[in-house]
Length: 67
Ligand code: FES
Image (cartoon, rainbow, N blue to C red; front, side):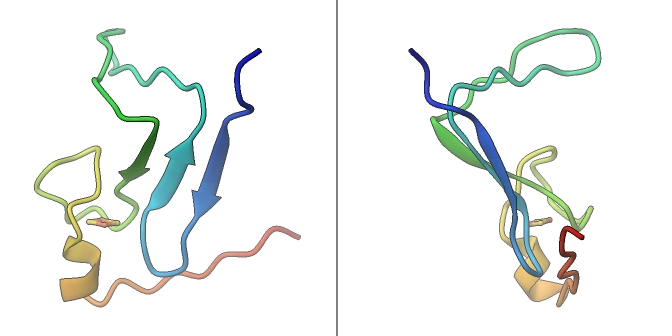
């Protein structure tokens, strides 16, 4: 049985993805990922769709909460 996948919205940072997830591009090509990885939410990463830590340099601010 596979671990339930989780996507966490980090305050002022990326989406943290963990669990049994296959990530693909618009053409269906599979990205090589680790068991846990981060996706850029600020739009400034040089390694999109992955986070490269640039959100800290650009003072990205976003703290959404589920209602
Ligand atoms: S969220 Fe980290 S570089 Fe964009």
